[in-house]
Image (cartoon, rainbow, N blue to C red; front, side, top):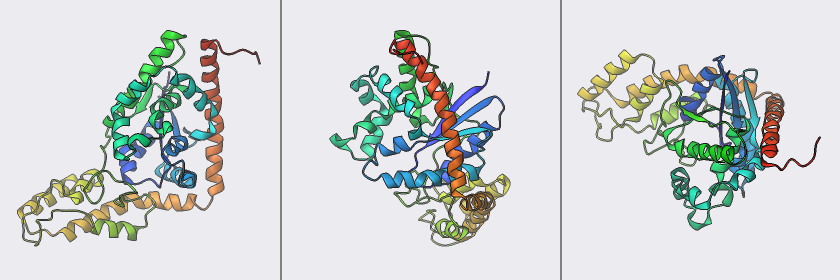
Length: 337
């Protein structure tokens, strides 16, 4: 039996190289494994939980995220690409699951607590944002996903789903599948921004985007945080915390040359401009094929949206089957078709 895998992204902006090394290229590898069946969601409903008063920010980026998906190699023949809001069964499942989770339990979720603090919601946190771990449980269980790719910071979210599954199955009937967290082989942790201050994000203006032109990539690399004490070329430099070397470790394929550059930099005599130019060449080789495919796909936005529509129809049929099983188990399927 195939593994069923669910993953996705919030459409609040174009995807960047952090998304690429953290998840996208691993998804391509997983979809190409015949043992896996992939569902990849553009999570617009989840994005609206903290963007309800700016819906255009979400709706306008659905196409952008889809372009990034396809440009990176996600294949609609091998993976089901769909839009969350087009699957009404997910909202109904969320309502049923909310009755199985206490407010106190959601408040204890460390991921929720951290994100509420990060966004400075205070007591004004939107209800939808507060309970989105329950919505995630609906997303996962609707497709009976047994594997969910996650980072360490998302494991508490998946544990919430596992608890809901156990509670539902013990209360009603063995209908739902309890998912397992999976860290794909070769997965990269969260890639810091070019300023070295934390995660890459649009709001911080510290990201390199898959859609960026090569000229823009060059400008961003030349602005990268290195070693503030490395003032003169002959000065010994520090590699740790130097974003150029951090990115070379992630994207560079010539590990021997990178090790040699690190030794030279530590000893002194190697300028920041030289290593930045080398990183530009490395990124050019990695990103140019993606950018080229993206530009070609962008010429036919209607065709891309048709892919999402077909995927959403396929996904809804699966979710509808699960919802029917859930309602039958709960005893609320009152009328026969």
